[in-house]
Amino acid sequence: MSMHIPFDNTYAALPPVFFSSQKPTPVRAPQLLAYNEGLAELLGLPDAGQDELAQVFSGNHLPDGSAPIAQLYSGHQFGHYNPQLGDGRAVLLGEVVGTDGQRRDIQLKGSGPTPYSRSGDGRAWLGPVLREYVVSEAMHALGIPTTRALAAVATGEPVYREGALPGAVLTRVAASHLRVGTFQVFAARSDTRSLQQLTDYAIARHYPAADGPMGLLTAVRDAQAALVAKWMSVGFIHGVMNTDNCAISGETIDYGPCAFLDTYHPDTVFSSIDRQGRYAYANQPDIIVWNLAQLATALIQIMPDRDAAVEEATAIIHATPTLIRGHWLRLFGRKIGLAQAQEDDMALISDLLTRMAQEQADFTNTFRALADGTARAQFTDPTSYDAWHSDWQARLASEPDAPALMRATNPALIPRNHRIEQMIEAAVAGDMAPFHRLLSALATPYDDNPAVADLARPPLETEIVPATFCGT
Ligand code: AMP
Ligand code: MG
Image (cartoon, rainbow, N blue to C red; front, top):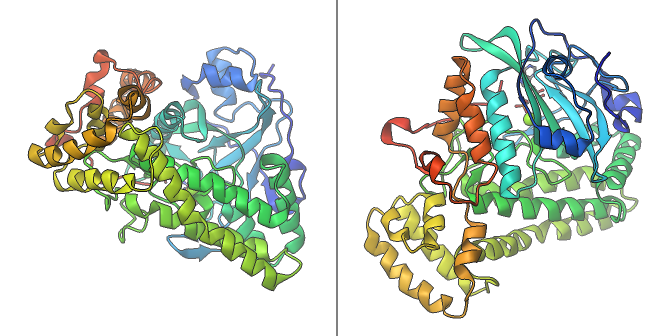
């Protein structure tokens, strides 16, 4: 008897051009490494034993009602259009409507080859699976829209990358897996019928109030503008903002080479394949605009009057930088204790960031320390902080709730890259304790928790992780 999941599938009911039916490839010896009980409850999943969970979330047991598919999409990767991507190592088991009334996808990642795999093996190794598990759950706890992690299962099989590594499957939960690239693939084929169906589907699923393709574009723009500002506010670098990794729902998706800033510098890049710094920390707002322009280009195809649509879409896209700037100002204002930052506060915030970059201040710890008056110790030359401090104090005079606001806005804990790498190293050696400790600490990132002070510490010289890698 397989676990009963109350599936309610809508994507698999679309015409076959949208996907390929694809069962997960069974694995040898599935072993449950992590299971997100809270999320399972939200999804309305029944209780099940460890073995059954391992069988289901490795893809060995297909639950009744699942309609496993690999979704088709395309996308721009580092600015170059790739006409066919699609789930090359993922299978959508189906959708469920949670106890909160929200519809979500349940997808296995690392579940074997699909027609879209091209030369890949369709598998994932333990490292990226645990990285995504921890970072996506940390993002959720930070209050940032994101896909979630439901389960991680070791497959008992090796995958071959640089050498043999332990294989694993991640179960990802998302508002949907519709991407900018899902629209691009049909636009590139001039398949306007499918593009229209997809647009109707996306509106019904995510933005029921949106009016037509331009309404959808506006809604996605608003969601993505808010998202990127939130990334900036916690020092998150996505690392691979290709249009296939840009979700229509406005959730953060694809935790391949992502990383959080330790020392603040706007040009920071971690991804080993991002040689030009296209997806550097400070470039992220511009890249969102670029990605939205690709969505606009696709959607224009199904507008009755193309010239008028180009004009309308251009106006929608051109408004994005102002929207992002507004979110940024509000969030960074709160980070320095201002309940309602005003336009002239931009200079005060920027001045702090400039000094932080010059004096190699830790992004997370500097902002956190503002509330308790110890920020100056974060600067190589503390007098650089002092010069800013007096201007800040003058502005704070009219902000009685500043310390509480700052503590609620500036996390004490983020998933630091070196801790993730150490956790992965331990897991590969069979020790899952650091994974569970990291995960549980990151569930309450705004609390002061002396028991995990080590996780708040920036990396020592010897611990710095200079580069991150895609999950492939
Ligand atoms: P990702 O970095 O997972 O977003 O991958 C980008 C594209 O490469 C998608 O089409 C993936 O499905 C595909 N891909 C990445 N890794 C693999 C793999 N190991 N096997 C098959 N396809 C892969
Ligand atoms: Mg991707």
